[in-house]
Image 1 (cartoon, rainbow over the protein chains, first blue to last red):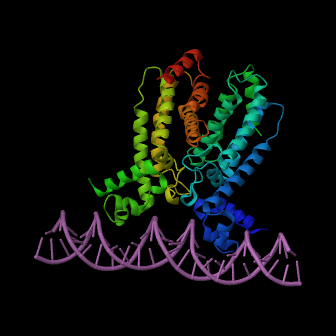
Image 2: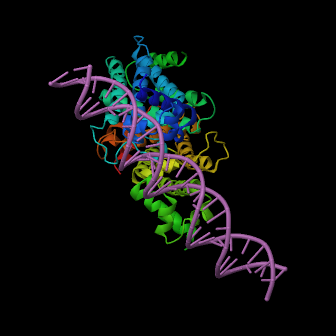
Image 3: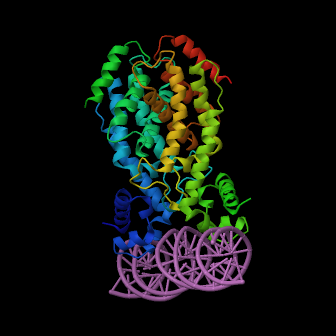
Length: 212
Length: 212
DNA sequence: GGGATGGCATAACGCCGTTATGTTTCATGT
DNA sequence: ACATGAAACATAACGGCGTTATGCCATCCC
């Protein structure tokens, strides 16, 4: 395996096990038996390495969300997607933080203050977001959007999932899955059940997804 | 004014103007004409100074939310509170990040990995949260909670506001207040209007608050 | 007045990211 | 097959960071 891949693998492992402050050029290079220069040969600097980590994180995130099955009940699928979103964020807490810029390992900020639309990390985030938009569109075909576009509804769901996950990661929602029951699932209900012509069926869909 | 206050004031100014990486012991001390030791005499270490910044941020945040007037229409008040929440987060982006641990200046994490309920920052966050709970309780007296506790509903609103603000700060919701119209206010509607016995009146309340 | 205490300056230590420099390795073109 | 140039790499150094050790001095208390 190439040095670059070894470095990236070690970085992802250290990030998951020891947090962002463990991402140090000297430690990483030593861990794979190389000199510090390896980081600069393959990534330019530490910021480049962190960006590569974030890119890998977006790939895994997209794969995780894509793995949510389509059951023919798009509202249940959306709820399942929200739960899968939380699963990923909690299982990869530090990686999730790096992806969304809420963690700055060693003070290396990934995004420039004046971020542009062409920023590759920005685009990677939008790509993962597009999976959510597509799922909302499938639900929208059943006639539930009430004048809102799928992008707008997807952005609302994204806000809920993002905020919920960060607060649960910060420890504000008690141990284990208490927050899921009292916060996340009620939010899914209010977002997905409130509109449309079959509230009872939609509510049942949410419950069905919640029990898996 | 005491050295400690001068340091804190300079730190808050630098954080707002230049971001978290500007919080450096040497630079701050030089800015107020003192030696580096001043930081360690008054705050122990840089983590202590950042915690003091966060504490000040929570005070300002609570004051900002408390300034939202009570109009006798608790649903409109809640919507106004959500908008005030966004105002604070966007006007004090870096401070907001430090408060909620989404920004780690220089890699100094404020919260221990095993955060306890007694953590003063954790408690400060809960105190600001209690303002939201109280506002929800006032709305709940009009009979809208449908079996949910005020704490649960407040946690849902908090998730929405937190996630929305962080995503808007990350630049995902376009320029200016576009996200407010298409994401935040629709979320307020779905959270506040969906339940209760007077959906039309509640919807009007949200619109009224949105126009101020 | 004398001694303890706390605020402060100076200087140093160790670690970090980064870079300069020289060496090795390897693919490529003739 | 051999020369050549680029890429990968090791070593060592530089500057900046947080932090600490040490000593000075003002202040308060008995």
